[in-house]
Image 1 (spheres, rainbow, N blue to C red):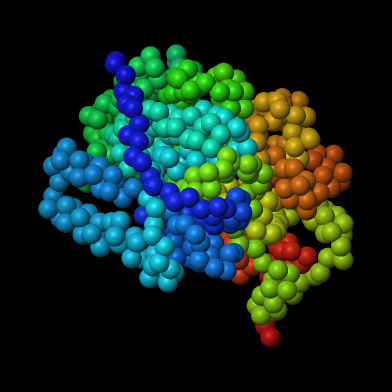
Image 2 (cartoon, rainbow, N blue to C red; image 1 turned 60 degrees about the vertical axis):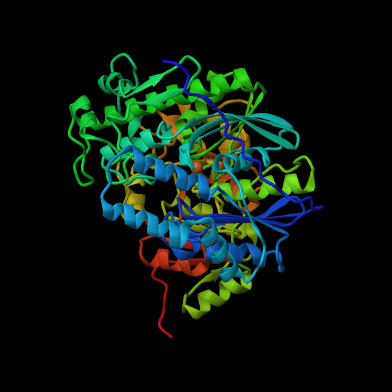
Length: 595
Ligand SMILES: [Fe+2]
């Protein structure tokens, strides 16, 4: 196959020169709308809209996220930037209409939505109506926002930049280079040739929701045949695309439906090729679907590593910044440093579309200030937090009976003992995490030492598919003892973005977090990131001999992670979580009393 790389479509974005600007970035109308504020050269706040509206993956205009970010500066920002170019996006939609037949109804629906909501003008109007501000909005490119979201907070002075997602405007994959202040986007692959949409098509085929169930497919894949030689679906899936020697690829669109706005993600020809009926969400799982998930994971790994290899050839650097929704595939991420020539890897916690608000804001800040980036994102605690008084007021107004810890030492001793005694604990600390993973600010914690803890967690709160694993958290200085991880341990493990094998001799010690293939999607924690969380894991180790906990997100299945104290109480009330630890207070479930 001839190459499918094209030169990047570089569109000049005019950014005024401003010394030390305060910049608001926001994203909307695709997945996970979000906002971010940058002040004094640093990310001051970043949050997804879903955390406020309680609607998972909320893609509406991020009114609440913007208001929260503006509240952190108390004045109008110098610059405002939107994460993508609506005109280019609409051009792609019009091209999609031109490629295939569509009904008048879908045509009218899409064009009306565009004219009334999603156009450049409507975004500008909505922003000024919502905020009362008259900033002129800068519109960036989607994949430039992705690339900037990783590079400008990586702490690297130069890096190879790779972005891979479903689609942004008309682009699905890019290679670029970061050098000091400057990002240079070099090559791209265009829609409909998309690794993200290939993964989504098979996610739908396997009976899961698009743009949500991809994590489930990644977990399911571990049950299937991981051999390219013997997995029958690998050979079949391989026929749905062509790959060039330079890592570029082209999907055969007779198998996929994403170039038709009225079709499913896949076409009947894919069903015929696979020789397997698509799974409906309520259907039982079986070995064929497990093998199909494994084949998809293998194929995705081939494609991603091929692109990264080419990226190293044309824009070599020891450091790789990786972004886009595909960079949330933590199984592949953990193979990058061993299977490519990159020595260092940075992925920011909101690698998917939510993270573009941060990338857009950082890009404009660095350009306006004409200053090379100096920021290294060392933690993800960038969303709303609540004072002790605010939390106590909520507990009192909700008539909650609670115990106050005497000290931080008392807190960690008590909570570690509760976990050791097999309790499930909601853990609410500080500012909420940026990105899809709970990292010890809004987490549910449990002991990994018991074989049945996965069942207990599912029965009490999570109600997830039984094939999905629970993730372990370990202090960074203990990680090597339990995991066969890259050394030095890459920063993305702090954001739960790498799946590593758990050492064979340790697997019996941690039965509740060992996935079927012996792996675990670990989170490493450093004390300076979250001292109470770090100290708790250490204390659990002192009490049990195993300094590892289960860390899963503080939410009910299909709801966003809890944000406010009231969200946490509501989640506790709706589940059988045994205890809630919130700031310096301990609440036992069912302890609400009438006034
Ligand atoms: Fe994207």
